[in-house]
Image 1 (cartoon, rainbow, N blue to C red):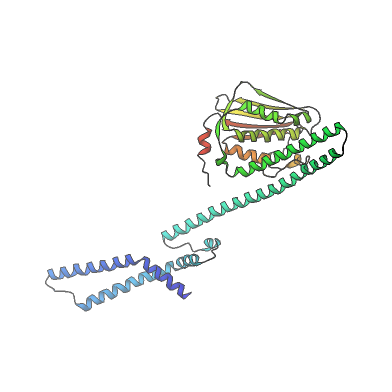
Image 2 (tube, helix red, strand yellow):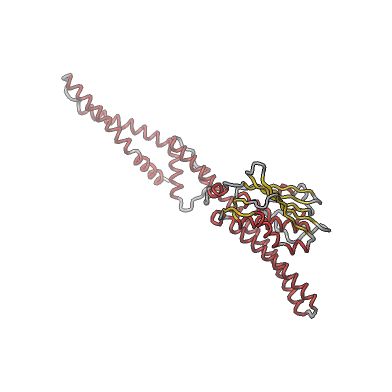
Length: 371
């Protein structure tokens, strides 16, 4: 401890060597001016003993000032020295460190506290992201076991079957399960890409209606199987929006998959409507995905964008991971657009997307890549 105090004292004096030197230069100039004044009056030079006394007295006063200042700052300086010499630093030491006495030390203390809080916020966000990723991976792997098992079962049944109709039915089931695997894999890939969204972004003007048709055609078999009749409503033959085509396809896929998933649970024929219109001032393009399925209960509606939240509807089917709408919401925000949900239990759900007609490119890319 004594060695630490001496080390801190030496560093303290070293940092003030310019101040000490300036102090003695000031005394020297004072002595010279006094000597010149005494010569002008014919009094001769100052006696040597008086000069020595002046130097001793000045040094004593300087020493008292430095000692008082050192004792005043000792706690802060000792804390900083201990932190700098610690081979296994603990960030919690920043919280318990002395606030300092000088304005410079207070600024240093405040800057360290701000950096500590910013670091902890980033660390907590990273830990939460890793936990979500781990949770999702576990759920996804568990979710993929079911179609793999079903595929294996159908293959075994097909091998033992001699009837053509049974073979067709089994192959159809295999195809459906493979589609589930494909969609699960795509969701996993998009989740992995979300952290580096800016690197995977290509903003351009796309034909919205053509893209909607393509996505609907990809799910026409599921619509037929679920007695769902899709249709597109649009007052204009061509509507273009400025966005990323791949991510927009992902958004439409997830919304249509959700609509089909919760519409087929309702008996009878259902409608699935994708409506695209421009706002009155043409500043926005509004896209609505409207289904007439089982709807969402009122108390679940505010939470549908939370990760891993499946709600009451998720318990009615084995395919819910609680990640689809969460990913859609994240992508929509990164594209500079907006999303809203309306639903009535037993009647259906409407998802509304709002895209700016122009100017998205610079708004999206101006966001910092590293945060």
